[in-house]
Structures are given as C-alpha cells and as structure tokens.
Image (tube, rainbow, N blue to C red):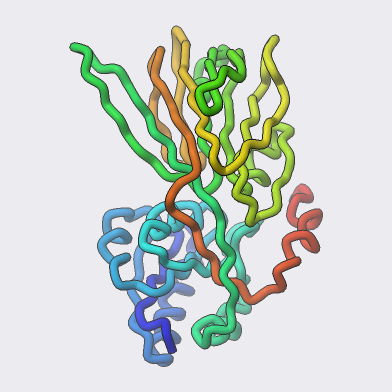
Length: 282
C-alpha cells in the first residue's frame, strides 16, 4: 500500500464528525496506516502534520474541504471528502459508505481529480509610503466586495494590463471552475466543467456598468483596484475575510498549487447529478 500516513480532518461544529474521524483512524490503523486527527479550524496543527502525509480525509462538508484544500494543496496531498453536510459537491463518500469504500482508495483504485486554484495577492499602501503584500490561495473564489454598509463600491478592473471595466457593484467575483457552482452561479454566472483551468469574472449587482460574466484563459491575471469611502472586503472562499481600504489593489491569477481529489465514482458523475445537487433543499 502506497498510502502510509493519513490525516483525518473533521469539522469541529458537526457533532457526528469527530466520532466518525476517530473510527476512521482506527480502521486506518488496522490497515497499517498511521493516522493523525485534527480540527479543520486548527490550521497551525494541520500545517504541522502535512509534511510527509500521503492523504487527507476531510470529514464535514464542502466548507471543510475548502479549508483543507487551501492548506494541503501546497504539499501535493490528495483529498478524500466525506459528506457530513447538505450539498456535498466536492465530497466523494457519504458517512454511511466511507468505511466500506475507503479500502478501495488505499488500494490505489481511485483516479485523481485535479482542480485549478487561484493565487490572490493583496497590495496595500501604508502610512509613510510603505507597501504591504499578502498572498492567499483559493479553491473556489475571491470576492472584492462591499462590507456591512449597503452601498456600492467602485472596482477598476484590468485583465493582463488591459482595462476591462470600472465596475460600480456590490462586488466582483473571480472564480475557478470549482467555484463556478458557488457564489458565482448564485450571481448569474455560468458553470464550468470541474477540471477546467479557465477563470471567471462575475460582477455582483452591477449598477450602470458591465453586468456580464467573462471567462478568462488560465494565463490571465486580473487586477482590481478598490475605490470606496466606506467599508470593503476581500473574501477568500467565503472563509478568510480581509478589510480593504480605498486604493487597495487585488491581483488574481492561477495558483501554482493544484487541489487533488481521489475519486471512486465515474468521471461523468458530475453531469449526472448536477441538477440534483443544485435543487433547493428543505
């Protein structure tokens, strides 16, 4: 068996996720694999275990996978998702079937589903003329949007240095193919097939500016300069939120990191269950 060290990462606020993670660790030990357990909210501990790990099992929902992917992708660690949530777009197994199907993954019978990610750089001007640059990686999307004050912001947007639009919007989403079924879709954007390397730009509630989604090639770099007299925010995967100030610059391009998922299900399953997964649930 090529998989020797496995991280089992669980959502700390889903009551059933930790007990299932503990049972998975016991099963893995019986299969001669070393397992470590960690809350998906403890990024420091997760990072400390990544070096030398062969697989990450995410026990939660799509939000848990987003947290796991942002950390383990840099190490090339593949992910298996166990769905404890509602939607489960990115998860592979339900809680009821993972015990039976996990041996197939460990035996090397899974195929690798590679997903493009975004690298997002935030450049801020500080007092005294200094500049601060922060870098983030996203599996779903990056949003440059208004804060809690319900007023539009201006986002001057360029693609590869060419002017695209001075958006007057609630926000501008830059999305991967994986994120195309998330916030971008809710804002009226198209769905890209999961392994697509293209990016999307989708304005949210555009006012007297370009309202349409735009599909960009993998080589594109998007530059967004924020102009606002009130609150604005940079949101990474809807989970990491950084306040923005007037004239802050956000650059988004394809990340050097790739999220890898191990799949047992057929490669065409995405299309077969797309409508079912997008239906409103009670």
